Image 1 (cartoon, rainbow, N blue to C red):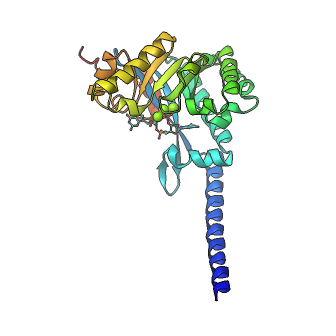
Image 2: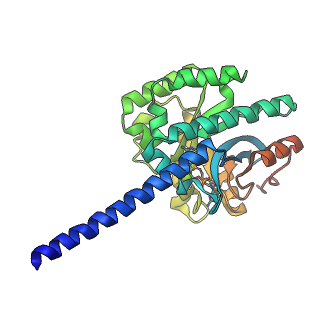
Image 3: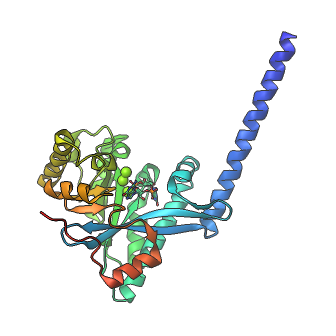
Length: 286
Ligand code: C2E
Ligand code: MG
Ligand code: MG
Ligand code: MG
């Protein structure tokens, strides 16, 4: 009896694993169809100069318009894309869309603003990345400075020496670099000086309570001072309230991104916004 129970148990697990594996295969195929079949959507969220309310640049944030499940956020499909290697095609799609958008803006006589693209670890380290990016901007008659690549600390720390080399290569070719989610990785400040980074993004977790106390604001102030001393721009991520915005300004952080100013929006809405040169938030009182 013990033997057959063992066998039954094993069969149960085999079936469960098969079911899991085939569900995963189905999701993988679905994502492949999404990327090749036009179900991805380019969204953009402005980065704002909070002292004037003017839009300075934007970040590309991908969405998936799923035929049954509606508009999906990256959290629901980027991890799968990374695991399956489809992140390569997905990133290529985002980069193409961003360049197409920049070209449309230029033709329409709109201000040219840099657009940031999030780059996953595997894409960042992939062979030939710099050559492909060169080729891409050249084919769109774009300046490499129009493209910002957002990378994370934890990504860079995996293989620091190669990462620094890659950053230097990108920097030498004129691409702009942004350090995303700053403060959440196991950052070693010593390495910061080795990164030819143009912009540092303070993670939302610091912004959430920047207006709540001495310690919270001390941390943000230290990051802002450090970044400025290293000649980097600082962007606060996830600014949601006027009180957070005012606290950030007091601490010397004037570039903001967050729902307070604008949510991520479809490319068309972003183009319309560029055309009207809006003030996205009245300058906070000093
Ligand atoms: P991230 O690069 O740190 O992007 C910031 C996230 O914060 C975005 O979430 C944005 O919508 C959200 N956000 C902006 N302002 C606020 C705010 O005021 N409050 C709150 N609560 N959230 C705010 P989203 O679009 O869901 O993207 C999540 C993450 O997915 C991104 O984090 C990025 O790591 C990744 N991702 C997005 N698009 C791409 C892409 O095209 N390629 C890759 N590899 N990753 C991407
Ligand atoms: Mg980002
Ligand atoms: Mg971020
Ligand atoms: Mg973040």
